[in-house]
Figure 1 (cartoon, chains in turn yellow, blue):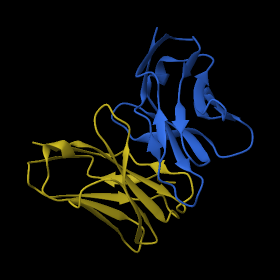
Figure 2: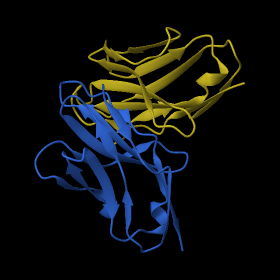
Figure 3: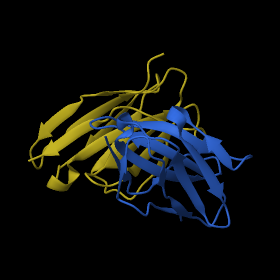
Figure 4: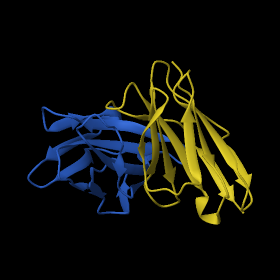
Amino acid sequence: DAGVTQSPTHLIKTRGQHVTLRCSPISGHKSVSWYQQVLGQGPQFIFQYYEKEERGRGNFPDRFSARQFPNYSSELNVNALLLGDSALYLCASSWDRAQTQYFGPGTRLLVL
Amino acid sequence: AQSVTQLDSQVPVFEEAPVELRCNYSSSVSVYLFWYVQYPNQGLQLLLKYLSGSTLVKGINGFEAEFNKSQTSFHLRKPSVHISDTAEYFCASRGNSGYSTLTFGKGTMLLVSP
């Protein structure tokens, strides 16, 4: 079975631009969470979606937004990019909100 | 609020030697605990998890961890490491309510040399 997939794998943007990252969960999983991993740190929680509704939000500015589609895939959007947004963005899926999360390979974003 | 502390940023060890990676957690509620491994330029792979029951948990690749409630610790161990175990290891916790947000430690880089 396919695991969590994310696209693109790498992305280079300039300050002020907008970016959209995509995630497809494991088949049958209804919950998707997004994490930001800055170099040398552990992942930090950004959002959790379950059944297409936002169920949790971490301490990130309103420039960050996300949504979940009827097929349970998800998008993370970041507006007005800052240099500090450069990171590995990880998507994780689980069968429901309370179950173990399984991670995708991540999207590495570089903001110049 | 929860927090996870990984006491060592790097652990160098020789091949076939035993290793212990330390993790302490802080939480006002009961927690579930996890260890994930991250190989270079990859995402996170689940090694093992403690949800309830036996405090000694066995995972993949020969790793095991012991939950110690009195010490608030969840240390990861392997009796004999291989070169291929070189990776970043993350300890994580989450509350045992119906909500699966993970709080991660800063990670420990395990460096295995011949």
